[in-house]
Length: 243
Picture 1 (cartoon, rainbow, N blue to C red):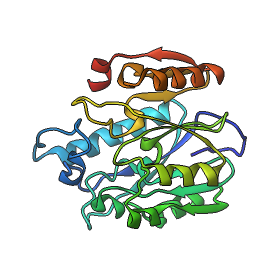
Picture 2: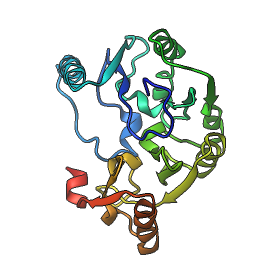
Picture 3: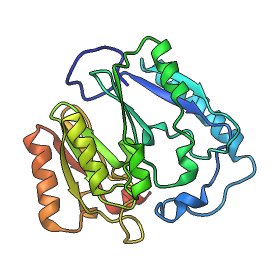
């Protein structure tokens, strides 16, 4: 989310955060997210709210504008503190709603949160709703599935059950991005569930776990795309990604 209409900026100086009401483990997402292991203590929801409030404070201290919205207790939305999976905001005033793999996560898509953003003074010119792809078994979980080079209009996407071809192509076509899709492996040798667990792009650098991209041609292509766009790749190990 951007607080100014300046075009072609990579990094936002404002964020929307959802304060979780019932944070917890989600069995519907555990199958494709092998980072999610084991149960949670009974005090996990309250601990999550304390951590959330602390993060808001630190971000504001660093000069980031934070718009905080409250989750609702019903229906239970254990992943509500991750709104980047269901919504993204863009410099031209576009708001994109995304198709989610887990039915329990679809309740997170609440238009009142977008209205909160508008009331805070941010532009909303159009809403692009990709959620109908859910009925066809096609998914794209926001900036979890997508790592966007906003300046060069490149969308990096690791293929997985949560990031499928048709939804990715629809996003790219409607937003004017070029998709760079590849396969990468998570901690158990299965597809990494989200691209942002292995990749992040800044203004002049990119952090990438290129070891996780098994195909050498795809690995070389991703690194070449980053370098051609002026981003210095900073490699991290699979162990660092998994940690």
